[in-house]
Image (cartoon, rainbow, N blue to C red; front, side, top):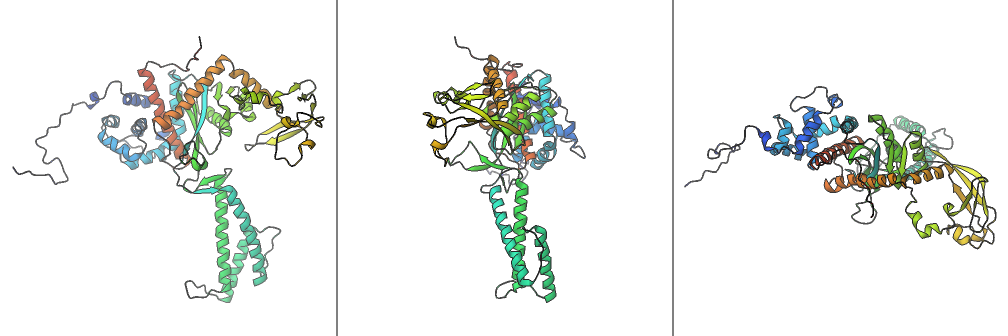
Length: 541
């Protein structure tokens, strides 16, 4: 029997033997407790006027609301790229259910939606999600657990630009330019008036005069092998090279801003140390510092920053959250990386309570710390006369005040204390630290720097975190805030951003957070855990 193989592009021409059988209503195939149904209902409840305002002409098939549903459901199912989204819409019945009979968008539509339409309003949509969860009682609105992690940027390897190296090279270039201008003045009889330092306007003035000299003498520039260049042409080419380098260094410093580095392929990414160090050599990678605020296991707020540490991220995080959310958190729970005098003061002035573990909390429990006689915590303090007493019984009296200014502009005041007599002290070696000091130990005197305001704030905060409520909040911080990053990186497998630029990275992080929240709501509903906010402390018998 001869077999006729279909070699046509249309594969349906020779399928007369096969009868496709599907129910009239495809919706009945989807289980009643499937998360896609919850997602569709959840998005329908949101006010998406900010998203619609990004369109000049609102599309109808599919609408922005349907596109948001499809993108969110893709993130819920670990699909982050636009091409697999398009493939899912063609083959997955759950995606067809969300499309509501509309034609399948191509991958470019999904990419444009994420970067051009969702990115400008990502914060407002996240605020809408959080406010809705607060209205239905799924988040408490009382305590927020804050933590941060670093996620690698979509930047190529070895594309780093270091601010320190650029500044050094710029300084060398300015010295070369000063010598070059002086040489041109002597060689061509050109007078450029400048005082002490050569600036860009002086170099441009020299360049203008050199080109005028070229036109005056009628010199034609030549290029290529076998042709001899005029000395004036060599001088002008050297000057153009210097000017090009000057523009390059100026541009790099402008892009860096207050940061120490950036990537050439993603100017918003900063080089920082990652926990995922495959080589084990501490290699710096371009990345972003992602801050999560978690309440009742839901990510209620997030920010993206270039800071390699968490200390300076807390105040911008709290301000941004307060501006967008319809309610205000009363308790701020964070780990030791957020402790600073500025953060304590801001939380107090904002009428909130801090539950921040002190940076010395764990080490203060050790015997070595408690037996260290050189530490101010282990010295007796007389509050009435304002002096400390050392192990040898000598008094360290107040000798002055010192003001320190941080990178954020905050000015802290520190009290300086000096020992009245350190000569012939038998505990001098244990009390005075610093083996690299050039002054011999016998000639050195014990000094202390104490911030009284910070000391009071730390003591009040320590008293709060040692209560039963403080212990429960600290336990929940480690479970909920760090757990959100565990689900993001390990369960969802998201370890590197696909987009570039702070705006797109923030949009991508927001989509991940909303997808995480809907998955969490679905799991809580199915496990009958809705309305629970904190995990209870386990008490020993």
